[in-house]
Length: 453
Ligand SMILES: Cc1cc2nc3c(=O)[nH]c(=O)nc-3n(C[C@H](O)[C@H](O)[C@H](O)COP(=O)(O)OP(=O)(O)OC[C@H]3O[C@@H](n4cnc5c(N)ncnc54)[C@H](O)[C@@H]3O)c2cc1C
Image (cartoon, rainbow, N blue to C red; front, side):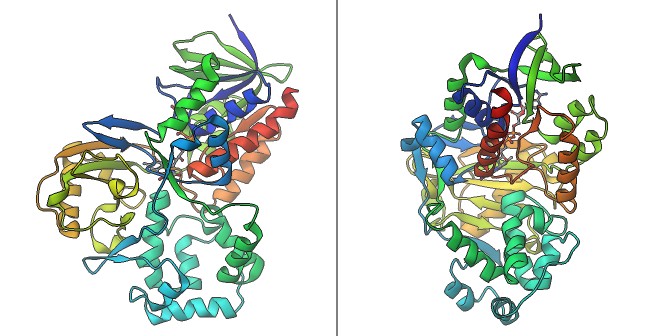
């Protein structure tokens, strides 16, 4: 029997959950279907042997929308904040060196040579304009700053956010604020300062947060709010457009009754979305399914504190590709948030793989944990084997905002305009961070509301 709903959301990661919750709250009749047994997508927290593991995102920037949502859901008290001044390190010449976090620290840092510092001065006093064509992050940094800065700081930072390749990522799509700063002010520094001034007052300073009991706290409460409006183990299999413009979706999984809906929001990764939308217009498929998602392995290791020579005071470290290691970086979880490891132990999470090392995630769990242990031992003066180990592999971890991404999204939006009632949400649209996904999902809910009235 066909089930009729006003609005169907497909995909129960954070994007789909927030969108469905916001619609339900405004009185829209909504149904959310999630293919797997557990809502949350890549947000997955596990407690094992006294360790709190985050298999996906370790922490998130506490944007005002995200904090507002937590207040509304009654879970703001469960947010924990990382020490705001926790230093971040980068591996250079075999040593972990603190990343300069202020203009003064930048100009006095031995990490960056004179030509990079001079390039920044030139940016402040001079004027430049971005090229008309899409520019890679690497080309942007070489044009505006220096090769050294790209290798030592920007490359590692790009690994940390996108697990991406700066030669392929588009500055305009991956870091739109930096692109807009140069475009609007003729200078990255002047433009970013202007942006910060404009935001002042309207937004509080973003903090680095997690939930005391794991980031799945947010997912669980959203799922609870949706109650029976959330169907798990239910995948959208086929999509048809009906004569009245509404949509018919056949399902696979525990609920096999097809659904007919006036509005459908796809909050699924692009490979799934592309194949489903191709059934109503084949031109969607090449636009969506070709977005690159590299694999990433998340390796959590625990050690007895007494066996780690490094103080671990800070956020963790990133590794430039030129260092010749396979690890991308390590987060010092037990230094950032409470209760991440049993008493007397430390908890370190290391990322391997990404766009610059596609073969790494094909290694076995034992090979990955062995590799990570071997590579971090000399950096952190570790004197024993790990006492705890967990490996999670995400075969399609994060969408890459590569060159041409902006044109790709423009073509997708042009196609979508021909199908009123069809909407997209997800981490390939306005940034991969949880805060960006929440913001985008709330925006989509606002667009759907008038159609549901
Ligand atoms: C390893 C890793 C580390 C990260 N670290 C951080 C971090 O530190 N900070 C941060 O802010 N962000 C981080 N991110 C990014 C952020 O977590 C994600 O971008 C965000 O959670 C994605 O949410 P989403 O809902 O858009 O997509 P997803 O979480 O991918 O959800 C999509 C959902 O769709 C479901 N689905 C698929 N096919 C179907 C179908 N046919 N029918 C129904 N459902 C279907 C899937 O099962 C899934 O649940 C990280 C991501 C990864 C992978």
